[in-house]
Length: 310
Image (cartoon, rainbow, N blue to C red):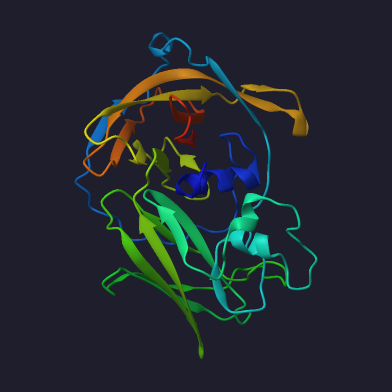
């Protein structure tokens, strides 16, 4: 959130509620893009019992988030294009049934120009305006033109004239990935469209939870061993304190749309940035790890990320 460098999480929560318990979507999980080998520094800890004594003076004991809901659908467009779901939301439907008349952050997006983000981030691109019921081949190439990933994006099982009928194509850029201009290319029959993805390092702190399952926004204790958080924009070779909050399954007040999730301070974690300001934090999941929502933030909350343990 807060400037384009941290826009990703704000946009995500802007559609699904501002709390850390973002709802799951139900499309099938696509193949993961290639993993990235990285020599970035990695702090390690165990996601264990709360340690309230680590909370520094002046830091909130509780954080409260409204409980919201919403989908992550790409609205169909007339032209053959590669767009994120928020970009299609900004444009609205070709027939005008959905309009983005209010001045929101969505309206500042340029769905036809280069997509620009800072490391670390993940996003999904939908192929809109494609021929219904026919597969599309999507390729991601690096700044040198080498293929990083290629997928045949097949139609969804329940296409409509409102939502794109193609599965999304995911991109993920973690610390260790080179800055530069990457290219997405979608081909269907005689139609081809390209989209630039311009990747750079952030100028301010940024945190990003690397999910095993993109649609769950969390980690299954029966399948996952570690919560991995990637960072960018940290002071080089200097420690930065991050503070973890937790909300259990019963940590709610109110009912319905007026309910809030109450997160209490859990523990403190120190992360040291590399020369380029990036780093990883690995939190080991144990049988005693508490289920529920987690929210990680720095002192001034300019960098934050969220996940669930279930």
